[in-house]
Every structure is written in C-alpha cells, then in structure tokens.
Image 1 (cartoon, helix red, strand yellow):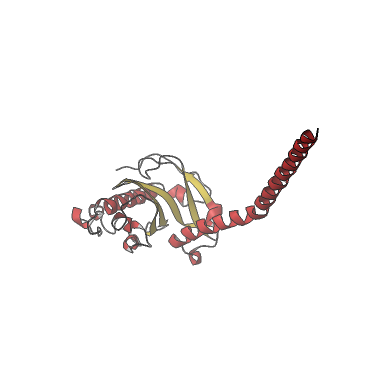
Image 2: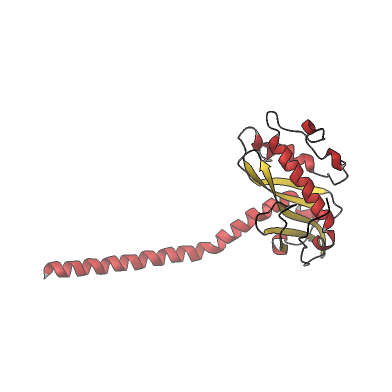
Length: 216
C-alpha cells in the first residue's frame, strides 16, 4: 500500500513538473517571439540596405516584397522573393534573388540590386560552398571584388566584355580561381537582361512580374 501511494505521489509530482516546465517554455516563447521576429527582420533589412541605401528610398523594402519565377535567367529552382525600393510611391530599384548554378562547388546564391536606369546597385553572395581562401572571395567580408559590379549595366561594359579577363572580358578573376568569378559575372549579366526585358512590370508598384524568357 505504501509503495502504491509512493508511486502515485511520484507520478503526480512528475506530472506537475511537466506542466510547470511546459508552461515555462511556452511563456518564454511568447515573451521572446516578437523579439526574435524583430531581430530576423533587422538582419534581412540590413542585407537589402547594403545594396540599396536607406537615403535612396522611403519605403520598407521588406514590406514591398514580390515573387519572381525565372529558371532560365535568374537561375531559380523555386519561386524567389524580390523587393522594390520606392521613393514617394515610385519604384527606384529592385533587388532580385539570383542563382549562379555553375560555381566551382555548386550553386552560388546572390542578391542583385538594379536601379531603375538599368545600372547595378550591387551584388552580394548570400550562400555558397566555394573553397575558403579562393572562391569565397565572392563574399564582401573576404574581398572587395564584388564591388566591381557597382554602376555597371548592359552596355557598360559592352555585352562581349561581360566576362572575366581570362576570357577576354573586363572583370577580374581570383588568383588560382576563375570558375567562381566567371559564374557570378555571367549570372549578374543575365539578371540585367531579365530586368531590361521586364522593366515595365518590375518598376511599376504592385504589378505581377512576367516569367517568359528574354530574347537572347
């Protein structure tokens, strides 16, 4: 009888402990959820602002997101989230998700910002598996190479020069690593082609973006 009572008491205590623990976890989640969401939003916004600075627009780009689908020119394997920067309701830039499929160690995921006049606001590598010390120089924190795209456009340089220098183009390659910069350069050029073809929808607020392929 005493053993039965002891088991019953222990079971009740264990149940109470479980309820209290679960309640504590739930309370902690609820109290920190908004902070976690806010921190994640701040990180995402900081990445966008690297490409399109805050003083160039007066909207929240995170709140002006839209979906693009273009396997051929943006290299996406699934719908991607893009963003518009607007000043007083007028779109001044777009930031597009882009994939360079042919990096040395696989896909290189990029964010590419393009101004309404067709010039590049900037390019950032946000995910890759390139070789440390070589291909990882596509990261801004490892090298300033990616800044070489700033201000470039479809005709600056001319299309035949949108290549790395080893391929008789104008863009630098990395010492000992050509495949990575070649892949990023080609993906960036294809993005400019896409923007040029879809300008009428990309730079009109809240309009859906067509997905047909631009002419080669």
